Image 1 (cartoon, rainbow, N blue to C red):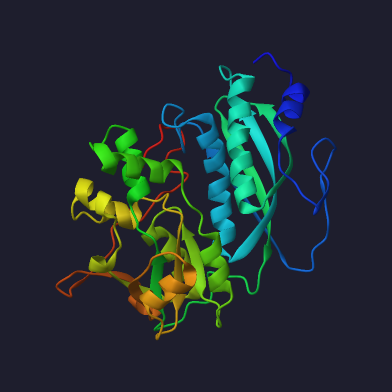
Image 2: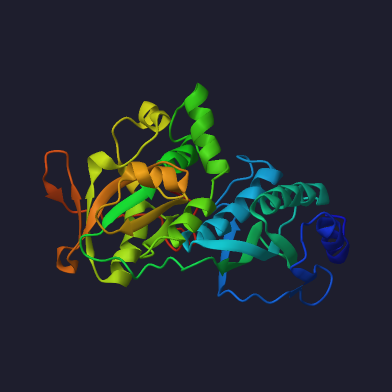
Length: 330
């Protein structure tokens, strides 16, 4: 790369969005953001080349948009409003300034769509391209948490599950798909849709539900709620929502929908009496009931179509540390 650090920073920051809440944007030692009366949400996430993405699979703008989307999903899971972020880039050899300008166009488009100010960041050398985003949000009404699920609550998810994991495998050449199914499944991995509006609607409900975004797989992320809430769960395998494109490629297999990860849908728990149809209308996205919360002593169980309860698989989802020292795998 011919551009120096500060020249590249200046170039990337030219078109970054920020509004009146940002009193001082990129260019100083710190950004200055106007204070808020609401409780603040803070999250951080990284995407590492060879672990979370492959540059043969997506363009620079798609990569930038995706990097912000996975952070936005954390704010969605808390029912919050995203406000501002800073970005750290670890840059390897072989990537030029034009690549990063394209990546920041993608970041900028995603930030404008979500109302996020990109207020600064940092650049350093690295052996692999790494994008780390720290995102600040605000609690809208009541924060959605993982520790509020109660026995007899019903478990719901938004959207469909397993599409992104299947898209990953299609791009990696592990699964064959063609036509509309291939385009849909690959696009679901490349451009996840954080459920911000749905999370904000859930935050307005009383009592506010326990919630989490499904980033590491349904079973793994549900497990975090069970641990924090000290409860168990029964999941109905026949109720797991899968898209028609998933079914056309993967058939009846449920493993990717249960443990594949990268869905960035919301999983939440509500007292009995809420219908999936009414929740779909309220949240503006398809909602499906997939199970119920039970006593902690029962642990987690999967209910087959014949009514038999079985134990979940040992591998319940994506673990960031499983691939340390090896190639990325899902």
